[in-house]
Length: 206
Picture 1 (cartoon, helix red, strand yellow):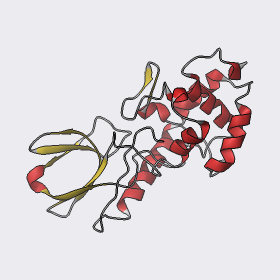
Picture 2 (picture 1 turned 30 degrees about the vertical axis):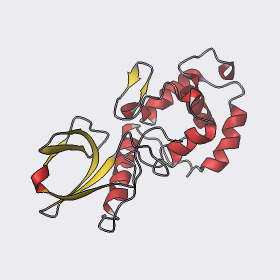
Picture 3 (picture 1 turned 180 degrees about the horizontal axis):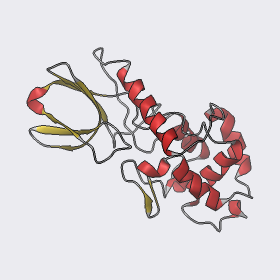
Picture 4 (picture 1 turned 90 degrees about the vertical axis):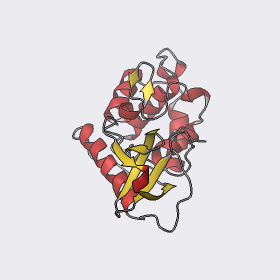
């Protein structure tokens, strides 16, 4: 189960190095955006699921989870309640849709399985240039491509007459490693916040 970014088969012409590089660059910008946080661990889904399930039984900190939602740069792209950006899907209601496993998998392995709501496209131009990103706007004559999800106001406009071909990308705009600067108890508070729907009175915060 996924919460937004699109996955589809590419072709043999796909630039196999360009997409992961863009993904890594976005992750680097996110790390800069959240300050001086240091690498903690390359967290895996299977190791975190039992830890989080056990840790959500109580004593979680709602306010710290809310703060981490911003510090991990989730709020740059996702709405939660009234806060956050609108590039990615709204996460306010994930508690009614996602299990802990699904939620962690979407965060840790964003390119594993992605829905068609946010198609990431690779565009090959006739002049040899390659433009990769989300296409929020298109007309009969142009495509507007957002290459950097941390700069949502910047769109690259490509004329259809200049396009040689284009294919869906297999790499999500959402970078890997977003939890790798968090300690275990911080991940617990972040997940609790995401599953709270904004309700700080839930049992897991008592």
